[in-house]
Amino acid sequence: MADTMNIMIVGVGGQGTLLASRILGKVAINEGYDVKVSEVHGMSQRGGSVVTYVKYGEKVYSPIIDRGEADIILAFEQLEAYRALPYLKKGGKMIANTQKMDPMPVITGAMQYPEDIVGKISAVADLTAVDALSLAEEAGNIKSVNVVLIGVMAKNTSVPYEKWVEAVKDTVPERFLEVNLKALELGYNL
Image 1: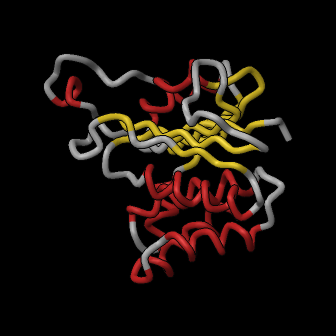
Image 2: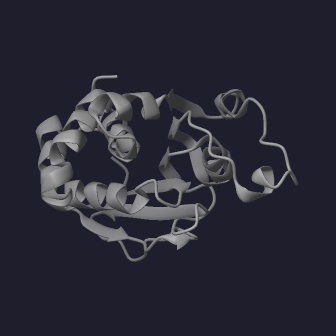
């Protein structure tokens, strides 16, 4: 593992980026790492772009991730994945939900939603594209897209599955626990 692991989580307000960062942070803390998690940047209440950073390692001084530094980008929406691409480091991994959520310029007709984002990203980066919305529906709640994607990412780490389950149990409110454990499992087993 690198000295420091840089994970960038991007999405749209209301998609659960903060919960995802808390789960990741909890796993890293439980593994004995120094962890820094940034606050959410963006218009989280209005469906705007939201970015959260999670950094962990032996000693971490700042949560901020600059362009070309992200080891992993977890993207909860296609356009946000595309916008985050410059932050992915050479050899980094992007895990992106295939869901599309029209931003305000598209809704108002000022712009078109870009075509073939998955193809454009795949051409230049190691991309795992996931229909996380369908898996979240299967888990029992469309709001569990975030935990589905955490599950996909967890499969790509050396951390045992049980540690991810433990972090979800420690982080998710009791009333949403069953759905989120199912979402984690579906993402992990994808």
